[in-house]
Image: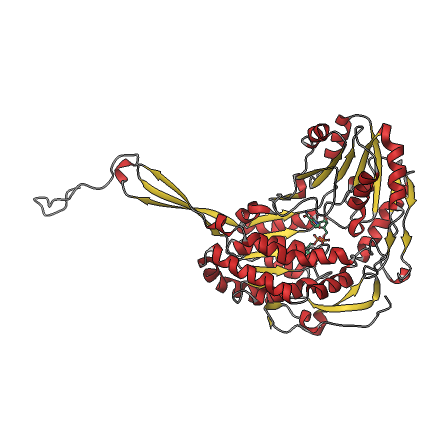
Length: 518
Ligand code: NDP
């Protein structure tokens, strides 16, 4: 874990057209080092910050690719998506997982899951091609009609830093299956493993179908979300940026798919069985990826009669966490990915302390962690906190969690729903029927029972936010539907059956004056 050398990966220094073909050169002033959050002295690679001009060129290429890609059946596109998945499997996914751990900080099993998601998602959506190609026949007195799906057109995919490959693939692949060319903008915080993935994927598809323009949100992101040629924007990120994108897209009425932030509650009911399994699931749900997952447990509400028991068991279990470099096998959670996130989480915990909350710091430092050089934070469990502090009301996206008591189911539901967010939630109970009744009252896109973590949702389970946690759904065929629109083609063979009088003019005859009669 002492590696501090620079291994700038030259290919990632350019925005890519597809495969290895760059969109253009980048002035050195617009190259940004990507640093390892476990050791900020270590430069992992270099990212080029694409300009509005690069976006313009990428869009030209996407527009040129659009007719050919749309003309294929989804079944033919699916064959190419499967080839892309095979290419990703052949090109050393383990190396991309290591790269991701170095740029993001997450532990190896998570990087493997994140990187491996691309091939899995390509194969999953390839399997839905027949559903896309199926056309619906309709008959009426006037004739026949067919309802078919057609692509929207050039689509922009804007990616957050926390699960870059997996989340990019969840947006990109349904759009491709539906026949849209896609321009992807990675986050400049974690662009490397994603750009490598997309280089391989794009090379397996016709030119211009997938282009990549790394860059900042304010430049490359704005260029994409305001350009008339972009018909749809698929975005995963914060609610604040989602609002900005919605406003930017309004003048050209782009279709939007927004997966945004959450403040996900876990409700431990009076009927819960507080055993090792529950505690293990709850701790994992909170601290996996240092809490930097959109649907991490962000608030825990426990029935007052079980509060002390839960807090004790949970705190003891969380104390086993080992914070360190994600490359070290002893590490269970890595550093915070960005320094600004590290500062924000510390400020939230400090504010909770100032308001009289009890803060227990748990876990231990990994033996090989360069503690002062990384964005490392030991987890904290916060109890006896008021309900209105920022740690409870806002999304923390870090390894700290408030645990609060409630007295009735009604109160628990009101607390869970007392937020503008509505991404996910969990209900914990030994009584499945009781849990289900409570789950149905929660305003969230997904509610898990007796679990709340990565993997609790699979690709067939629609996923997305209620309220200000987003628009639309990812996963399943619904994601393909949202990247396409229905077209009706009506063949009218019997116009006489249509309503309304005949308006065709009667045959004209010449008047004695030689003028046509009206
Ligand atoms: P941000 O909203 O800060 O950024 C997401 C992406 O948007 C980045 O690529 C960013 O570029 C870009 N961006 C920023 N400003 C603009 C703009 N004006 N126009 C276009 N693009 C822009 O989110 P984070 O990357 O910080 O991700 C964390 C957030 O994402 C959390 O709130 C989390 O809950 C949410 N999230 C939601 C998920 C879900 O499924 N609902 C899943 C994962 C995360 P830049 O490179 O400049 O940052």
